[in-house]
Every structure is written in structure tokens, then in C-alpha cells.
Amino acid sequence: MRLLVVEDDRDLNRQVAAALEGAGYAVDRAFDGEEGWFLGDTEPYDAIVLDIGLPKRDGVAVLESWRKAGRTTPVLILTARDRWSDKVQGFDAGADDYVAKPFHMEEVLARIRALLRRAAGHASSELVAGPVRLDARAGRVTVNGVAVKLTSHEYRLLSYLMHHAGRIVSRSEIVEHLYDQDFDRDSNTIEVFVGRLRKKLGVDVIQTARGLGYVVEPEAEAGGKRRSAR
Image 1 (tube, helix red, strand yellow):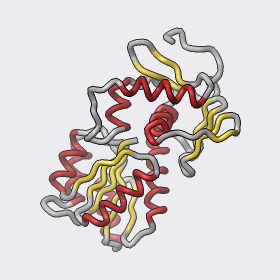
Image 2 (tube, helix red, strand yellow; image 1 turned 135 degrees about the vertical axis):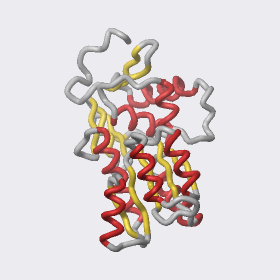
Image 3 (cartoon, one colour; image 1 turned 45 degrees about the vertical axis):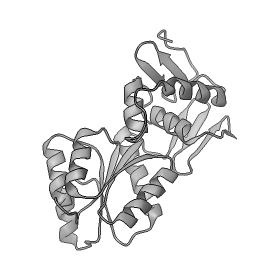
């Protein structure tokens, strides 16, 4: 999953980004409202952490602009303002959740996980495809109950495919949603990551839709009949 952190306090921005990256997300960073608005308007983020008190353009105005333009990316507001009226203003602008400073980083991580689950239509932090289980809260993957050690790139790939189980995910979508702006988007590494992931899992849950991308079947269908597109 690819996230954006918009926070003008550089130390806090770095801390939040580091915590999110440590949890297995790809993270881009912005330090003012103009830069944050532009990135959120042009890049396909899975969720955004947005401070309200930003220079150049207020966070509420940024959020209102995104929503008016039809951007539905889940947004977690992060701000020092803790009055109920500020919370109402944020929610009315289109925020999905709200955390007031000071905060515990674990709470931010938990709320981000919840936003991503809701956006993908999942009620639980545990995703299942046949014998494969991914615990988003613990960052743990098991196959038939046995833990599988994955690299951060492999974990991101599996997590994204399982969050969107039942839908064909194109290679370009994988690159846009799993890697930050510095990633070489012209490379052919997606196929390499898929191959390594399949080998480590040892079970056939990631199917290839020729010419289209990859798909993980939902829990009820995983391990059953393969797609003819494979």
C-alpha cells in the first residue's frame, strides 16, 4: 500500500513516515498544503495522513479540494487542534478519521489499517486466501499455520493483492500503489517479485491473467479451479 504524509513539522513527518514504512507501507512525504494537495490530486495513494495546520494552504481547504474533485482516498487528519468544532470541520470537509496531537504512533498505525480495511471492504485485519493468512496488524504471513518470511517488497505485493482479492490487478497498478516516487517505474521487477513470492508461499494462490495482471481469489475460491487465463 502506498501512503502520503502531509505534515509541516519535519521531525514529526519523518517519525510518522518511518513508522508507516516500518509497518510495510510505501510512503511519500509533503511539507506544506500546496505540495500535499498536488500529490494527493495526481498520485493514486491508498490513504493519506493530513495535518490541518499547514503553511501555504490549510489542510481543511486541501481536503475540500480533493473531495470536490472526486478524490475518494481515505484521509486521516492529524492535528494539534482538539476542540470538537475543529473535529466537526474536518469530518465535514471529508475526513475519514481524526487523531489529535500528541498521539501514540500505534494508534495512527491502527487507524490507518482500519481505513485501508474499510476501503477494501474487509472487516478483519486478517486476510485469507486458501492456506495463506496475512495478519495486517502483526505484519505476519503464514501458510498452513507456518510463518513465511517475506521481504518488505514481497509483503507489500501480497498484501495489496489480498486486499483486492477477486479482482485482476495490473502491473502498472501494482507499481503505482506499492512503491514511492523514487522507484524505477520502467523496470520489470514486478515479475521477479511475483516469482519469488510464489516460491516462498509454495502454494498456488497468485494467478496470472495473461496480458492483464495478477489475481488472488477470495477465501472461498482460493485453492479451487484455476482461471483459464493462467
